[in-house]
Image 1 (tube, rainbow, N blue to C red):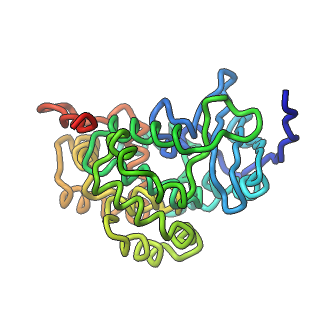
Image 2: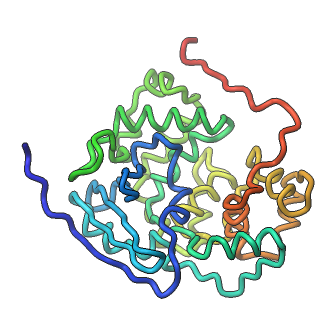
Length: 308
């Protein structure tokens, strides 16, 4: 057996409550995500590719005010240093007033829900692009297939099935037939390959003011308002990220807050008073029992072109 190196360990005791599971829920891409898994003992295992190299880390919490992180791999020190950011250390809810019964109830029930800031832009961008114009089920299947095939084994004693996401260099050299086998359409694969060519520059968006980061993201062909917001809410800690153009979101927000479906324009108008906390409003709705609008018609059809 190969000896496992000692982990880099830290314990963070924030002055505010932090719910690890609720805060990092947006970073998971379905229950079978090879980069995000819960252990039987309740610990959360995650993998990442930091600037300093691959890492896996294990998060355990004692209540809402003590989180321990154990990290392995070349990127372990960087993971530990970024733990407060990852768990919403920069998230300042000052000035946020729920001002709606549903939001007030969800806010009270979820005191540890924070807006994460992973700082890993490409890791948030690739699965967001995979989700463009397809069902969530299709996108999650594609992410799992590609990461299992092209990711690397997680360092340390992480669960055996876990993988570290591919680097930009790997993403850009995936052959067309494997994108096809994963069920990814050419427009999405082209966008990912284009972004992978400048992965380092995109990752540096985490060091830019939000407005400039959005401009850099949306300067990439295939990255629009929706995709940029999906990235910003996960990697950049943007409490106001609003995924305009989402297939379901405006309907969910409308049913939760006014009892009827809305279109994108109606959602934007409705949420304007909560700026700069519109993403916080969305997360509170998602964490409530009213996260899904009633179905009035058929689900989006899953298109599978892999055998064509």
